[in-house]
Length: 307
Image (cartoon, rainbow, N blue to C red; front, top):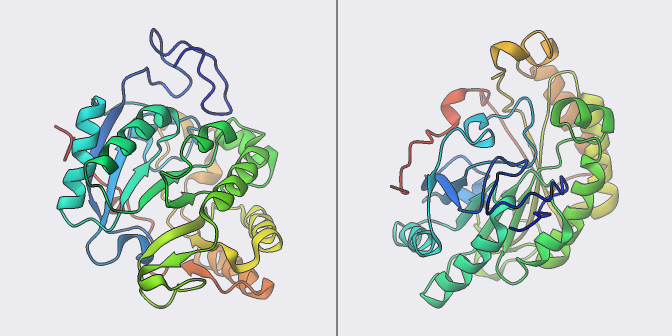
């Protein structure tokens, strides 16, 4: 926590005394710990993913669906002992896995808690759910502790990532981070020891990497570039999740600055991206159907499972 360089912001803030770019200090803060049923089917299953939502974020996209968390407006402090209890509580509740949401800036504390929890009987797969703005050294702290990586690959264009996430180096950092994640997990493994592609078989993933990409309004060209990169780099060795759930949630002050983000993604835009994925030959992928651009899919960050 001294001179923090956990994420590519490398703000070097002493988080024992001040808050970093992530808007968090040294002590872990969690806003919700509960079963969550809206992840990919191989993550949520029928019993739900045991999600732990951490406060703060190193990226802070202007369109963030979980902006309360990203801006550190909610969350309760927990020590390592309590974090271990939360992991074990979720296991006892029947969770399919432990799903760490936006954990980057708390990785040292989380790694310690995972080691202790495993010593106390935690046997579930651990999911690392991230926007992928990661430093490789931070990810290496998790080797042997994380079973499934669930990264976003949000942007290809530095102009778009600079505008929407104030991170023109996003693709450079995220693509390198995803390569490290794939190195750690290797090919996907599902329950029963099934390996390879199992998107349509309804099996829970036990190990592997799923790369998410959410289509943004007016950004189908960038989406195609992201998918082309993933296909040319990994073929079907990683699962891709193509998401249409963008929900306009801009603050009043952002409406004039980002007018293009004030509407949902159209069916035509999303279909164009999915069709492009199919034209590449991509088969190991999830797509979303129906109306997913609803705020009802965003959980309440009310301290459930934390307090």
